[in-house]
Length: 151
Image 1 (spheres, rainbow, N blue to C red):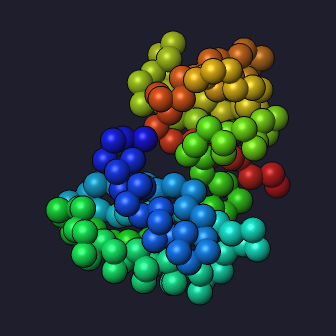
Image 2 (cartoon, rainbow, N blue to C red):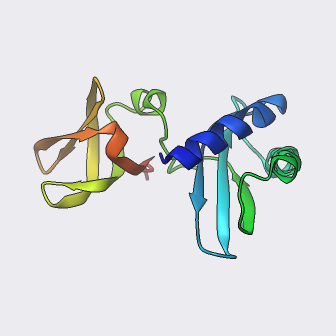
């Protein structure tokens, strides 16, 4: 996650927690006047549209006061869904043995996308099996990751 997203996460997390929800992570997609700040929230009882609206109001008020994003953007609040995004080491630990999609910032052996079972986590590396080969993916090089939904 980029340094900017880390700062935003640190700013937003307390506001989300005030609503009784957990902030899983954020995505900031910079696209000029069409930029999007997407928050993924969760709760032990699940998330519904009213929860998203409540968090949106709370975080929106905070962002209006703090103004950490200089350009125009849309704020979106979402549940993690079945293809749950994975942001932190704890999220990866919860899905060891499951199939994950991982996109790297910098290529490893000429590739940036890896899809397969998350075999293990060793130190700062995810071990993902793709085509019977175990790849060691440095967590700091992960651009985006999510759980592959079971059908």
